[in-house]
Length: 394
Image (cartoon, rainbow, N blue to C red; front, side, top):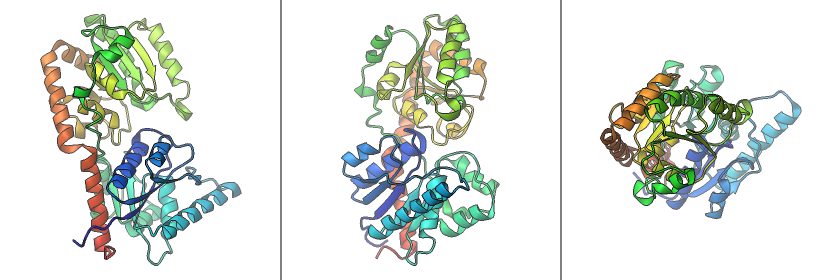
């Protein structure tokens, strides 16, 4: 391969969320910038976290709408055209080699921006959600003709392309998201810090659910499971941490709190709202549970819990069966099964040696296969392979 010169990379993310594709995009931007590449990050003004990248010296551009969906209104069409023109200007001014897009709004805008360029940059699409891409002429054109590579963040997503359309198999690769194993290192944190905040002792059973408050995350089923768990462990505490829901999930937080009170579980369930100190919460916990009933493209929360050497009880949706090895690094249960969740929690609380061993194996798996550096190196290698194939590395 020719010498690996620093690349001019345009990363685009339209999401406002801290987790999922937004977290993946920002991590990738930060790491590629640290590796010496010229990285430009385009996101919405309302996106969370981008100011941290700006402070590190990354060029960040927020003068773009990237509204989702398509609305046949004059205002929307004007906004759409402005976005495309803005991306064209950036690509030409910065002599961009790679345009990497993380969801549909920027996927279409980025593709249309380079469509008529004679010496266009390579187009990379990351697919972070498990919903299959629709098979239609527009998608086939975009993915097969215009896109140089699609990064599926789990093998199930990659398989969806093959099962639901005539997509080019050679272009679709699986690269798992990575976790910061240095930040999420259990040896760095005090188990008692959050426990003191909660007013519980070192030996009080503590179960953590760390996920945004959304119906798809299955908090309801974990709350139902607690009714059975406290019959065996009356002093057990469930700590629920996560950003309150938006759009269709508005009001869900209050409903969960009210449900807890009605079930007589107020003493056993603590709602912590959104927290920055996720490693500290995990350090305090005995078990991590993710009762999701759908989604889970990369499940960053589960990866972080595994990095903190916690046994993980999760459902079998999305990526979870690919990262949690049943009865080795955790326990897998069917979605929407509160009894199965309760049984798994009781099993691990009753068998501390088993739980500890699972947690140790979980961290070993993270260090072997799911670190940020491993993920970024795979993405960087993909960039270079594509540019070499197109004769763009000279």
